[in-house]
Length: 162
Image 1 (tube, rainbow, N blue to C red):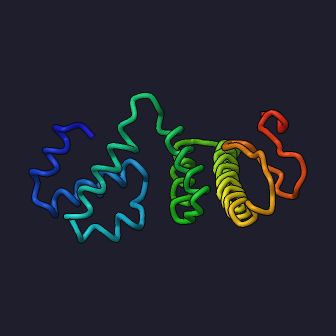
Image 2 (cartoon, rainbow, N blue to C red):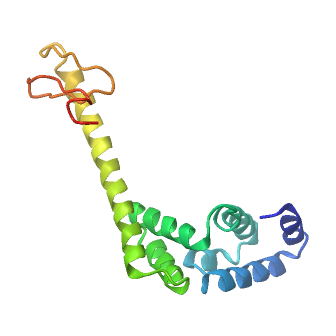
């Protein structure tokens, strides 16, 4: 959001600022997201949130709105935010994105979500088992290596084809 636009919004009466921002949101997205509708009676929270969100989501010079929506869909999917996901799917449809493009974004979000779960889980497992059984097991595991905690040969990233 340009500084002049920010100053213009901040110089308005709070109720007028909220009303104008809601109109702008509806024009841009075709609807007002639930959380913003919920916050509209709290201008001290609503105005800075919308200005921050707009600065991030709508002021890109290097990304078109379709790409921003596909990223929003992938992230909403990964975070399992059903309300966000459905709203961004509706916006993507209004922008003319195909079902296949939207599904690809969901698949990318799902893949990253899955990788996050596996990365966190395997690191916790490795950390806890190596710490608990450190005296019982001799290991040559080095940071960044994938270790075989069953007693077999330790595997490095080269063994896994990375």
